[in-house]
Image (cartoon, rainbow, N blue to C red; front, side, top):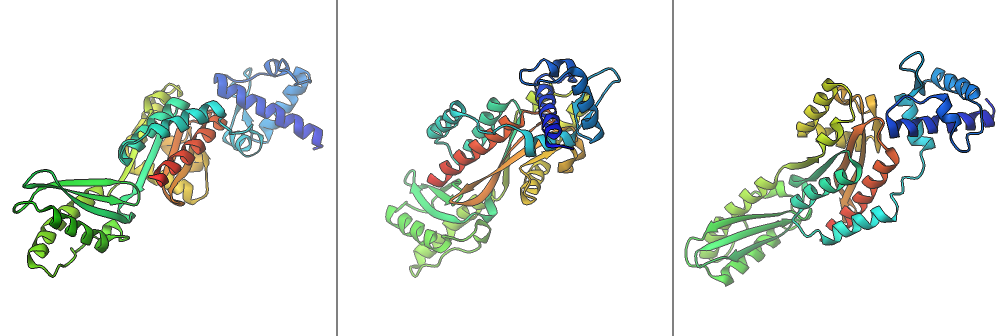
Length: 337
């Protein structure tokens, strides 16, 4: 095939995919011939469409209908033909503004991020939280709330804050609380949450007893944090994208099974796949879906994943651009603390 014919077929394939993404209707030669810059007759376009169908990029759902893209067609589009995934200055400003005002603790921040992703794309959004049991402890603080009540605060490197309120076994002494908190911070700093297995020891018997008492609250707090959070939003938004009720049920069923979603996201990233289309992701219930993923990090270390799930005819440029934009800004926000 000469370069001119290949360029023409690429132009036609791109036009068919973008028209189908926009309207969800088979695309015919007459429509393509009417597009500005196409410059060839409907008959020539029909020949090229037949050739693209023979190569596996298109298929014809009905004899007299136009063509629709196949998985192979979408893959070539994403890899070679898609226009820039730059989300543009308006969206960049929207995302930057969101994170500039976001001062929640990490769980609430990640939940809010899924809402942002869904609003911007009309796709189902998934954000997997940092794996808490691998996080390293930054500090332990004991703060007096009253003469007999203390709150124990544990902060990890992911930005998670876990608190436990306890009744203190005696009159609260702020000096003792500070000493116990400092000793625990030094004892646990840089340890992974899962390694919180024993309290620091004190030479003073009373402090040693109080430290052991406070340690129970620390251990309970980190055990509560020892989970992989997953935040999902927008399942109802993509339901209208599928004609078959069975497909809608399959998609919603998968999104409700959080551990499967987490496994899928991590599997794609481990394989270096930013976009998985149809059967590529290996989840049969999502065979009519595409998945876009991007990691986010804290201080350069990947800790979680942003994902968008929608029909294979999703707007890939928009989805990829928004996922990358939100990933960059979330990483910056978490790294800055």
